[in-house]
Image (cartoon, rainbow, N blue to C red; front, side, top):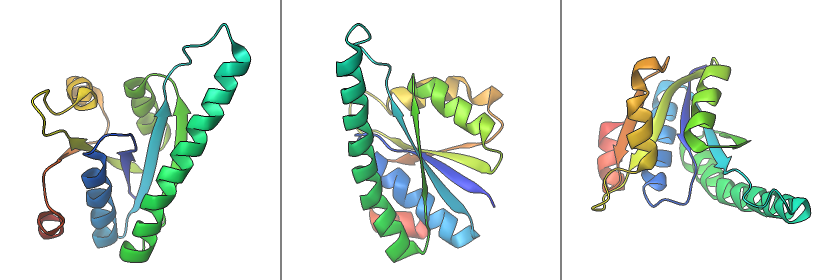
Length: 151
């Protein structure tokens, strides 16, 4: 089964990327894999504090995932899977794409602010030539109706 890999983060545009991935998966009998990356621990010298922070991050990720997963299950009949990795976001996204042969498309949401589409898009498009799959960039200001029309 072909899976759409979408990145779960705290960005506003993440919502449209999730919607797009779920809608495309529903229309193509595919699946959705949601990846969240915990950044490198800044408190390496305080191992106990670092471990607590990682566990709190995992709990937040799972809670955030469950909101999207419930919507996908209820509205799209898609049962997404969650993958949590630790490290630098771009490196971990590339590693996940290479390690999971079922991932067929990377879906990213583009920011709408003056800062541009976002750091993930900027960095990953530079690596697009070496990715074994296409990247779909979903504009962050598309409405739900517009997403439905294009998926």
